[in-house]
Image: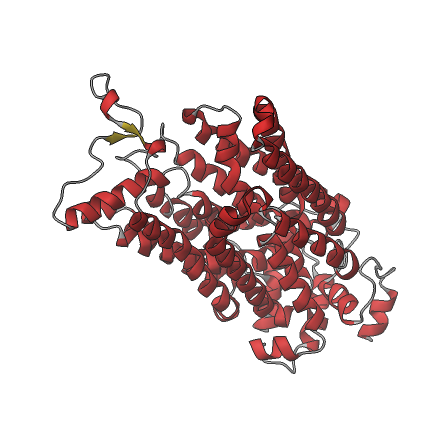
Length: 522
C-alpha cells in the first residue's frame, strides 16, 4: 500500500468536502459570527430591556453609519456605542454559552461516534443546526434576546460534537500518504468559516440593524448541504470493520475511497488492529485514565489541545481592533482589516496542506511555535512602547510593527498549532480507544477555551501590555514537551505510532522498514 499512488477519487473528494463544509466550516463560522455585529446586537438587547421596563427603545437614533444628512449629526456611530453593564453581562453569557455547550458536545462525542457511526453521527447533528438557525432568525419577531442565547447554546452543542466526528472521519478515510493533508482540511475550513463570518458581519452586508439575524440563519445552509451530500459518501471503513465487524461493507467503502479493487493490505492491517481490541468491548473514561498503555498518548493529546487554546490566539484577536485603531486605521475600515487578518489565516492554512506531508508533523509543530514565541516577545515590547509618554511621536510606527508581529503569530499558528493537534490526536491511538480519547482531549480544548474567555478580560486589565507573558511561558513549555514526547506520525500506521509511544521510544526515532513492528505483531 505504501508504494501505491494516491487516487483522488470522487468519493474521497466528496466525502472530505461534505464533512468539512458541514462541520469544520460551521465550527469556524460560529467562532466569528458574533464579532463584527456585536455592537448592533447589544443595541437590540438594550432596546428589549427598555421595552420590558415600560420605556422607549434607547437606540432608535443610533445607526450603523448609513444615516441621512439631516439626521447624521444627531446619530451615534455604532462603533462608538458603549453598552451598559447589564447588557455587557448578557452579551458575555451569549458568547460564553457557546463554549459551555461545546464542552458538553465534546464530552459525549466519543459515545455518539461509536454508537451512530462517524458518517451517520454527522448527518444526525445537522438537525441541531436547523433548530439553531430557527432560533437565530426570530429574536426581533419575538422581541427576545433569550432565543439568541438558545441559538448560541445549540450551535455550541453541534460544534462540540462535529469537531470530534469530523476529525475521526477524516483520519479514518484518508490514504496514509495524504492523511496529514486531508486532516489539515479540517483546520482550513475552520479558518474559512471564521473569514466568511467576518465578511457576513460587516456593516455593508449583514451587519446592520435590519439584517443581522441572517448571519445566524445562514447556519442552516452548510448543514443542508451536509444533509443532502453526506448520505451518498462511504462510512469510515475502520469503523465498519473494527467497531461493527462488517468486513464486506468495509471493503466496499475502501474500494470507493481508494479507486482500486485490491484493498486487502489495508483490510489486513485493520484485522490486526481488530484482533488486538477484541477483548475490550468499549473504552470508558476510567479505562482511558487507568490504562498504562494509554497513559502517554492521553497526556500528549490533552497537552496538545491545552497548548492550542492557551497559546494566546484569542488574546491576539482581542487586541487586533485596538492595534488597528492605534495604527491610524479609520473606524469604517477596521472591520475589513479584521477580515484581512482572517484571510491571512486561511491562506497560511492552505499552504500547510501540502507542507503537512512534505515536512511532517514535528517540524510544523516546532518551528512555527518558535515564530509564535518571537512574535509575542515583539508584541510585548512594542505594545508597551506605544504607551510610553516620551515616545508618542513614534507611536504609529510601534503600532505598525506590533500589527506585523501579530500577523506573523497568526501565520505560525495557522501552520502548526492550529491544524496539527486535531490530526495527531487522531493518529496516536488505535481504533478501539480513539473515539473516547478524541472526546476527552476535545473536552480539555473546550474547557481551556471557556476558562480563557472567562478570565482574559481580567488578565487584560491587570497585566495590560504584559498580558502575553503567560502565553509565552505556555508556548515554551509546549515546544519542549513536543520535542521530547510527540513522535513523528507521517506515513506510519496507527499501530506503529501507538507502539512507539507505548514502548517509550524517543519522539524522533522512527520504525525502520517496519521490521520491528512486524516482530511486535507476531
